[in-house]
Length: 154
Image 1 (tube, rainbow, N blue to C red):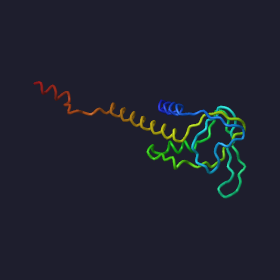
Image 2 (image 1 turned 30 degrees about the vertical axis):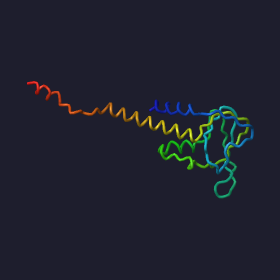
Image 3 (image 1 turned 30 degrees about the horizontal axis):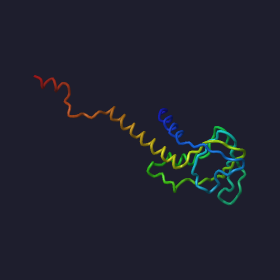
Image 4 (image 1 turned 90 degrees about the vertical axis):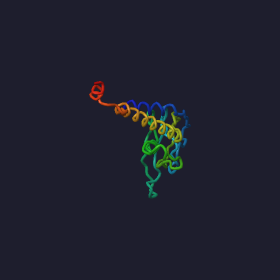
């Protein structure tokens, strides 16, 4: 299984795009479609909710720094759905506002690219499983048991 996870990570890396944000820039606002996962390589991002769904302002904020990412809901959307049902018009909605605290450098994995990665990965995984199944369960092509073969010689 570790090999499949590494394969998925490599496919994701192939689609990452470098991104740069200035200090105090909005990446995504609460209530907007979450169309990218952001992997931070430099700088600090704040993730915070401005309301709890009942109009009450929340003061809890999460600091996202180098080596961390924002966009788990997008990854869940892609990995928990079938590749054919990944509809970009049904992207998850951000429940938080994401804003830079300082200049930020990182990589973005766009929703459309994630859809492609997951589709390819699930197809390749299914093909590999089918091939493994065929290798471990060869079809018997009208073969007679070896005992029968020796009896036919007599």
